[in-house]
Length: 416
Image 1: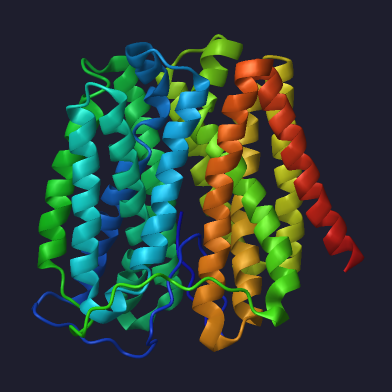
Image 2 (image 1 turned 90 degrees about the horizontal axis):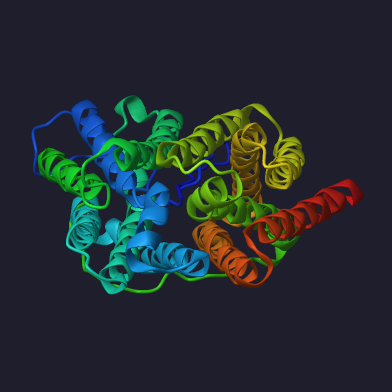
């Protein structure tokens, strides 16, 4: 989902992964555009790219009707996206430091456009699978590279502002995508195609903006290599606590981004696509607020607060399903989102503060791989459980498992 940039004297956090090689003044190459306008253009490109990643979320019931598949297949389609994000992070995490930000972002936009194109002309599940993989690759590329570009271009070397904007456009784009697709699903004439046609139009405008934006990295020798994953011994205990809480938070985000429309329609009798999109929008908006609060708290206090909120949020999920209460489910999305923002921001800030500078990038990469595994595998577990136990029971059981994991992290923090 986003990037962190941190120096020993400045604490900033977000859900992105970026470790630029230089924090000094950055020159621009090949354009006369001002850095301020370039910063605005990259923010817009970032927003558009993330907008497309959540368009299918409120439309899954429509895909189920058209292709006659159940909840399990919905979770598999969603999980494929998360695996694409992991691949994008591992393959493209450091490439922009070598060949420049713009070429890598152009590849990300091309993947996003190809994904939307496949959805527009899909007539079976195969193009949908391929489209979600490409969308995940695009999100993985933008997660680090776009944030690095924002840090390069921010006027006055204001890295905190760059991090703030990266949080807002990353999560805000996701939330807006889900909400827009939900509205089109209820009121549009072609709900399975129109959102992606609109997305293609936005990507075209974003491509022009990217072309006009100045480059901040000189071309160097290209080497495509996997991002190394490792956790130094001195940060291992902090990593385990932060990663466990983050895993739980991403698991719940995966629940809302894939199965929530089925909860609304099959359990609560609320088949509104707009409502399904609004739940995701509320979650990401609350996550933004949680991450923005992290610099004002100590890492430990933010992590404890986030875990408490996460436990309360999944409790509201179980309550909403058990009592078939729409208000409880809406409240749960806000509480879970706020807890997620605090947990991810605090966990990554603590890891970056304690990890050796030379190994900070690989440690943060490892952290986010754990997060996206949490986004994918638990959701598939819900789909499997729903096949045998029913959707309501599977959702309540999932909430109980996540609560146990979060409470275990709290107990570990209390012992410490």
